[in-house]
Amino acid sequence: MQLTPAQIAQYDRDGYLHFPEFFTAAEVEAMRREVGRVSEIDTEMVVREGTSRVPKIMFRMHETDGATASPVFNAAVRLPRTLGVAQQLLRDDDLYLHHTKVNIKAAIEGSIWPWHQDYGSWFNDGIERPTMLTMMVGLDASKEMNGCLYFIPGTHVIGRVDPYFDTSTAYKVWSLTPTDMKRIIGEYGEPVAITGKPGSLTVFDCNLVHASGHNLSVQDRWQAYFCYNTVANRPRDVEKPRPDYVRSRNWKPLETVADDGILQAAMATA
Ligand code: SIN
Ligand code: MN
Image 1 (cartoon, rainbow, N blue to C red):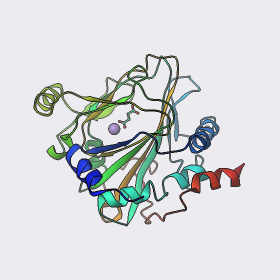
Image 2 (cartoon, rainbow, N blue to C red):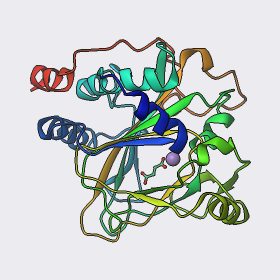
Image 3 (cartoon, protein in one colour):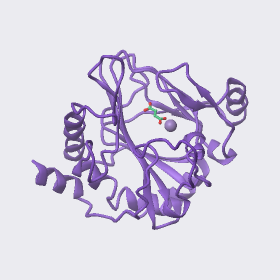
């Protein structure tokens, strides 16, 4: 898939692009089946809250090894539509995944992610430059009622703002202070809700300021996140690195698969 110059200009201006219909219903179904299968596995990569069996986050489904490996997700991160678009936006053919995750924002219980920039955490992983982006895949409809994301368009250009470690939420994220947030919203304008149907895709810059609300609805909100970095920008060594499933050391450049790779992988494993 080739982005138009207008789409690239929009991404550079706003810090994100939203595609309402990116994956087919069959592709969404294939990914959802895999999320269901992996959610039952007991491993540190499937993070559960308290005694609940419903996971909060599931990591590293895109690799070919490890407890959470999923051939379907391994294909999903390498389609001409996903990897190809990431290569165009990052202006580099050699990309790898810093991590991938599926966030299951559980019905009623799933809670907020405070205002943050992803690069706030990734800088601490030893990554020198913000040549990174995330592809967010809607595996459910995302709505204001079920805890969709909010973006502040254009904020990627401000660069990394010094975060503080907010331990007050279920996720414990390197977050932006209330003082910084009031200044940023004053300057860049009101947040935009990123809502969509299952199968939507939203690509966003690692410095774009974003957050998400509580899931007040009775349906879970499943969303997958593929976080691409350039191989040239792989992290330097840091003291006490986070585990490989969040700070990958698999820096082999990703190779593209056929555009129907998700369905091929689903058939092969059926
Ligand atoms: C994130 O910002 O990394 C995830 C937010 C969410 O899933 O609601
Ligand atoms: Mn984030």
